[in-house]
Length: 313
Ligand code: 13P
Ligand code: SF4
Image (cartoon, rainbow, N blue to C red; front, side, top):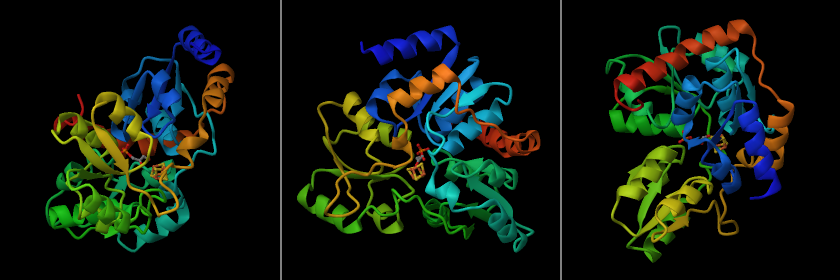
């Protein structure tokens, strides 16, 4: 075992710390984490943990969510610059002004948003429960879905709704190439296309299966195909390959020159930064008390609905 792994292991025991990691983290971080999951699983783990310190190997909005659910615990993010293009697409003041145009609408916000946007939302959702959260409202309910227009559009098409969409996208998924998907499908007729719902509609329409990172991983474990064309961030391939070493996975590129779809924010976290965060208990996430109080309501509503629908235990 490397020195850095030893040091992390000793410190996490000493400090009663838990390491939560998203699937888009580099393999070494996924391998050392206490839990690796999608945004829903990570929020649930954060809500249930008895640890004193949460080291969040993910991006800022995820660590913020963990802090909102654990205001009295220390939550550290290895690199504070680990943001998200979706969260950045909805600045607080612009979002408030947008909502003022639709005073009679309920607001469903994807978890990839800032704590400030969460305070203005009725309920939060993730890609793992978005359909069920939307369907928890009556068919004729007036709804706003923010900030991911690709996920919102996908749910509109799936459920026959007409939610008003905020104009945000994930800069990693939105640029995955439809032409590349068509070519990969033609060259590999035996492969199934699996896609994350943050991809654009032209990619999703071609997919055999659409789901959150956990849902995509579970699909490849249970499905009988031997080959998959994967339209999402590269990090998920680590767990897919570990779970099904006999299967092959072809990642959908953003264009012909690049076959890697790394989220530049997720990949800011490194083992060295993780060790420093655990050692120094910095950089820590801090939020005003009133923001925590207000943002907690729609997150807890999401967890309640998800538990009721059997999406989490
Ligand atoms: P999930 O892991 O919840 O599917 O989200 C994907 C993502 O882009 C996280 O930022
Ligand atoms: Fe945000 Fe996209 Fe990166 Fe996820 S993959 S953190 S949605 S930019």
